[in-house]
Image (cartoon, rainbow, N blue to C red; front, side, top):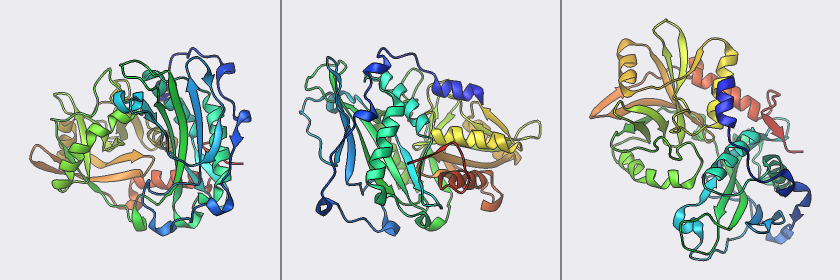
Length: 387
C-alpha cells in the first residue's frame, strides 16, 4: 500500500512557511444565544444537506495581509460582490467528511488528516493559499464540541457531515487567481445512506459520449467544477431507469467513477485468485477517495484477496460476467461507504452484475468493518476523538 499512500499524499512544497499559517490557538468564538439556537431535526427524517448546525468556522485570507483571525460564529449568509472570482471562474473547492457518535458516546471524525492533505492539493491546483491541515482539524474539533448536540445518537445510524469549503472572493473580473479568499466549514446531521438499513444494488448508465475527467485536468481534485457538468447526464440516467452514471474514458471505455464515488470490481483473475480491483490514480482521472484508500487497506489486512490498481474496461466487465469470474462490483464513498452495483446499461445492452448475499460479499464485510471503526466499536487510529 506504500505506493497508494505516496500517490495520495504527494504534492510539491508550498511557498508559505508554517509561521504564516493560521493557528487554532488564535480562534475566536462567538456563540449563539440560547434562544437563537435552532430546533434539532427528527433524526429519523434527515435529508442530506438540508439541516445545519448553529455555528460555522470562518477565516479570511488576503494576498498582502495573509490569514486573518479564525472565528467560530453563528452560521450566516456570505456577502459576495457580483464579480467575485468564485462566481465567474469556479475558483472553489470543498471536502466531504463525517463525524460519528460512537457506541460509547464519544464523537469521532474519520481520517480527517487524509481530507486535509487532499484539500491542500486541490487548493494548490486552483491557486488558493496553503494552510496547516492539523490546525484546521483542531478548529473543526472545537466547532463540533460547541454544537455536539447536533451529532445524532449512535442508535440512529446517522452521522454529522462536515463540509470544509474554500472560495476565491476578490471583487474583480479577469481570469487571474484571487487576492482574497474565504475558508469556511459548515456541518449538518445526515441519515444513513440506505434508509431502513436495506442495502439495494443500483443500476448504472454508461454512455461513452460523456466524460467526467481527462488526463491533465482536475478529475483528481475535489473542485466544484467537476460536479456541475455531471448533472445533465445524471438526469438522462434517471429517465432511463438508472440511479447513477458510470463514467467512462477513452476509446477502450475505461471505468473511472460511479457518480461521485470510486468504483471497485471483485473478480477471479486468470490465475484463479480472488482480486479486488480499482482504477489507478496515476492517470489523473480518479479522485483519491479516503474511503477508497481505507477499503483497499482493510482488504489487504484480510489476506484473502489480491488488491490491485489497474485499468478496467467495459470489455473486461462483459468478459468477466460472461465467464462467471465477476463476483461483485460496487461504488465507494463518504456518503455510503459501499454501494452495490446490479446492472449496467451500455450501448443498448443491460449487463447484469452478480449481487451475492450481503453476509457473504466482500463489500458488506468492508462496510461493517469501516462502520465498526467509525462508531467506536473497534479502536483504531483512523477514528479521531473530539476531546
